[in-house]
Figure 1 (tube, rainbow, N blue to C red):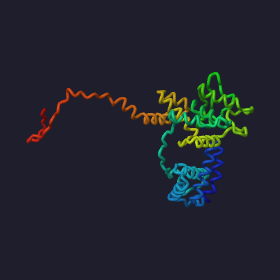
Figure 2 (cartoon, rainbow, N blue to C red):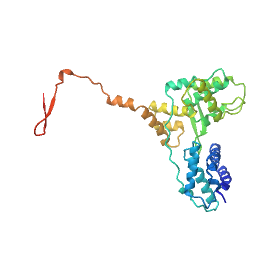
Figure 3 (spheres, rainbow, N blue to C red):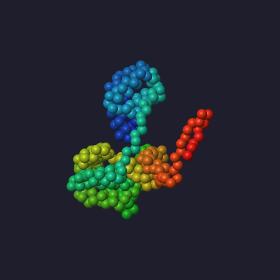
Figure 4 (cartoon, rainbow, N blue to C red):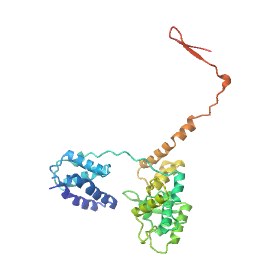
Length: 314
């Protein structure tokens, strides 16, 4: 049997494990764009060689996919084949994944934030919606999927908070908090809507707004405003965490507000803040005021004696 004969079974197996739709689609995309062009799916399961894995890595480079996901799908597939009782010539754990340099945390400084929030067309309902959405994202630190999952009745307006269930598995409920300004923008948007649909943010057709659709409209607004920096929904979450740390909020509080499972994730933002403040902190501590007191300066002349010793004369 060929390796490709088991891919459908792997997808069904992942479905049974409640694999989220985004990851499911990514599996199919990598299969079609990387693994199939590599020719590996046509290899018999007992004839696969380690250098065949290199074909997948090369095929991924041609499509601009340099992450470890290229090897992950093959590893998962070989593990599934082994679980089905078939022996393979290469064990799944022998496939090493390519290392990927960690991305720098990207965030907006105050000038950039002001330009972005004022870039939306407030003469159009979608522009008003997106302005309200980025205000909510910036004030609460929610992920885009979490924000778009909200309904009208989720917001507790008097307490300026909402309870969401999001993040990564296992999903846990947590509270998010808003500012008066962000809620005012949200209220402006809701007051203009003439529908009774439950979702807090909707498309022009009245359906719940999707992350992909929001990314497109935000990208268009930034392009029309002449903003060159890549603006995406997650950058507002990064800005939220970075601003909290700039304000000396402790790590544990930032972790809880962001809904990070691990403190190590929060520390990435702390590292970014520390890096951005390196010169400022260096100058504050090390660059003390320096005054030259010429009255006390004496010219000192150093010379080498015949014995090789150094002496000074005034």
